[in-house]
Image (cartoon, rainbow, N blue to C red; front, side, top):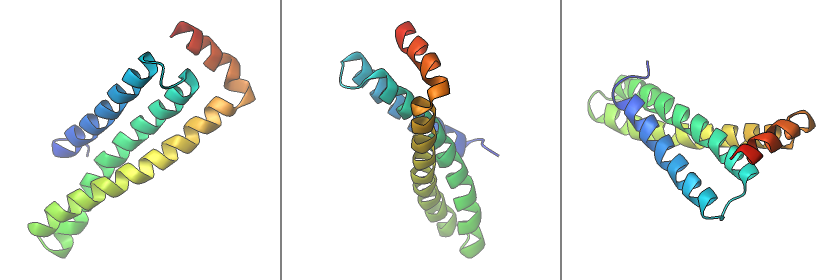
Length: 112
C-alpha cells in the first residue's frame, strides 16, 4: 500500500499545497494559526489522495479492468483529497482553538 503512483500523487499534491501556503505565510497573506490548520489539511489531503488512488483503482478494476482502473484512480484521488482535506481542516481547527494547546501554538508561532 502507498507505493508507486499513489505515493507520488499524494506527495506532489500535499507538497504543492504546502509550498503555496508557506509562500502565503511568508508574504503576510496568512497568519500562523491558519498556516497550522492548512498544514494539517495538506497532510491529511495527501494521505486521502494516496488512499483514494489505491482504492479507486481497485474498485475501478473490479468493475471494468483497464479503463476502470484509470477512471477509478482519478475519481478516487479527487474524492480522497476532498475528504482528507475536510477531516484535516476540522482537526486543525480543533487543535488550534483548544485551550490546552493554545500555549503550544503560541510558542510555535514565536519560533516561526
